[in-house]
Image (cartoon, rainbow, N blue to C red; front, side, top):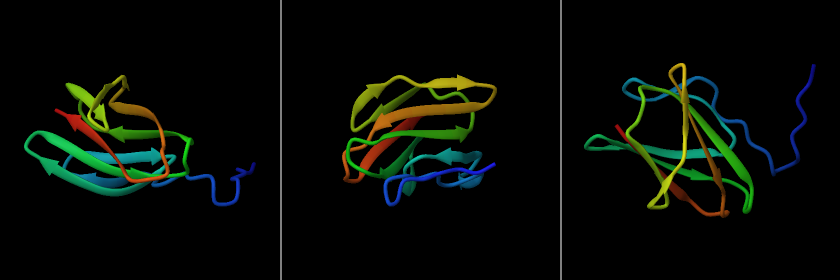
Length: 99
C-alpha cells in the first residue's frame, strides 16, 4: 500500500506526538507550529495551504469547547479522541481547546 501526497500541498503531521501534559497529537493534516497552556485552555498555532481542509486529532479528555480564530467550532469526541476540522487560510491560525 502507498499514500500519495500532492507536492507542497499535503500534510500529515505529526503521528502520536505528545504536545502537552496528557495530550497527544494523533495526527494533523496541517502543521502544528505551537502549543501553549493558558489556564485551562490549550492554544494551538497551526498553518497550511490556503483554502485547504485540515483535521487535527488529539488523544485527550473531553473538552468543554473549541474555538478557531475566536469563533466557537464544532468538534467530534469519541473513544478519547478529539477531532477538529478547519479550513486553512495560508497564515498562522489559532485553535483554542477549553477543558
